[in-house]
Amino acid sequence: MKGWLTPLEKAIYPKGEERLIRRSAGGCPEFGLSTILAGPRSQSICPGLHQPEAGSHEVVWWDPSKLRLGVDAKQGLRTIDLLKGDAGPQVSVQFVARRQGALGNFWSDANVRSGHSN
Image (cartoon, rainbow, N blue to C red; front, side, top):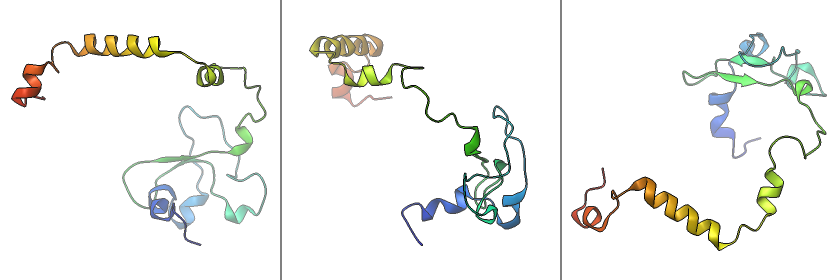
């Protein structure tokens, strides 16, 4: 079945039998033998570091049994509070002022009019 991710398959999936080769991925926990929680192992890729069919990059296939699911959303960053908060217009004004200060006179009218943008 073809989908919108089909063009990426060669850049993500390892070649044939290489899907079954287990290589550790630096900075990752020790993985098990499957990238799926349920289903036939024949449909899985061995978790770990893989060289995809196309490209010179490497891809880490994750072992889903190593993910901490059901974690309390209050842990870590306060992302939800940041997204639902109302900062008000003053925060935007402060951001624009800081940005303009950081850019200095680079985007001054003289530079823009003269076409200098590098």
